[in-house]
Structure formats: C-alpha cells, structure tokens
Length: 257
Image (cartoon, rainbow, N blue to C red; front, side, top):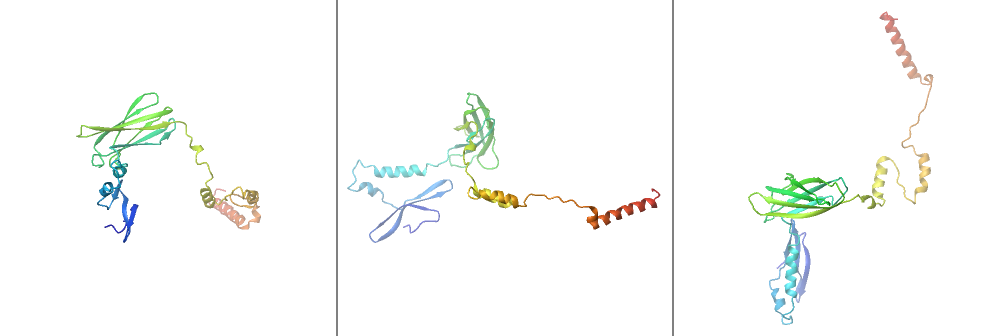
C-alpha cells in the first residue's frame, strides 16, 4: 500500500480506520503539461453495491465521471492559438503564435499553417505562419490591426501526408490603449531603488516637509564656478611664461623673429 506522497504530489483525500493510520486515498501530481492521479483503492465498486445505496443514487458514477473529466480538462488542442497582445491599439502589430500537436500530442513541424484574419469590417486577410524554428510545433506571424473593433483570427493547419486538417479561432480587441488607468499606484520599492542608485531621496506625504531644506543643503548635481587671477596661481603663471619664452627663443634661433 502507499505509505507516503512523492515530492510534488498533493493529497486530495485521506482516510483511516480501526487499527489503520491515516492513508492516502486520492492524490495527484502534475506531469509535464498533464496530470497524473493515484487512487490506491481497488474496490471502489463496493461503494455502489452497499445495501444503503439506492439504485437511483448516481454518486459513484458522478465521482468517476468528474475524475475523468478533470484529468482531460487541460489536454492541449491539436491547434493552439495565442494572440499578443490580447488588446491592441489601432495601428499596432498583433502577433499570432500557433502550436500544433499530433494525435499523440507530439509537436509537429512539417505542416502548412494558415490564418484568416477577419477585420471588424468583414475584410478577410490571409496570413501564412511559417515554423518559428525556435521551438518544435511553433508557428508565428504578425498582422497590422488597422481599424478599431473585434478581430477574429482563424488558424488552420494541414499536415504534410495527412489529408485531414484542424483549425481553431481566437479573438483580439483593437481599441485605444487604457493601460494608463491600471496600476497607477505609487511603486515605492522602485522609487527607493532609483533614488539610492542616482543619489536622490525618496519622499512620501509624511516626509514631504523636509524637501525644501534638503534641496537647500544638498550638493548633488550642482556645479560651482570660481574665477582667479593668474598671479594668484603661480604654478600656472610660471608655466605660461616658460612656454612664451621657449616659443620666442625658438623663433629667434630659426630667424623668424
């Protein structure tokens, strides 16, 4: 019998009995893109055959029906379509990403993938999706969203050597961007990090009164200019006189003066 759970597994149902410690009755664990289920009970049919269960009671059937439905709920489609972004602004390019699987859920690279882009005005544009090469079974393309409204993107795939084809539709809304209305709150951690990296200071409503004083006394970002006469800098003055003397002597030596 099962004595414990594997790392990453989750117990959905446990039970115990007379002289029997708590045991796993139903557990699941994700496996790749699917779900594995462990039901270490070999006589679940006894639940249905118990004398207290009426013939009209469908509890046993419902249990197994729901278990099987849950196991296959996330099975990938033969053609998966993702549009990015899911809400675009007029004139923005929409990216189409299609994923193609065969009957064994293996990625397919040798397929002809086409997309029909139906605009809000009813205009149909054919777009070819080549294999992206970056990943197995992945096909990509883009199209411009020129007018506002709801676009339908119908992707169909025809495998080489297989007469049947599969298709799937997805939708993208094209409208003026509303991103400025979302997540408009103050991002304090980011502002603190920017202030620390640039030598600035972070203020809140509670510490705003200190800003005027800080500005008056801070030296960050200020450039001070100071003017001095040459005779107040003897090293520079002597250097200039020496250069002038060398230049005059050279000219006299060459007969240029």
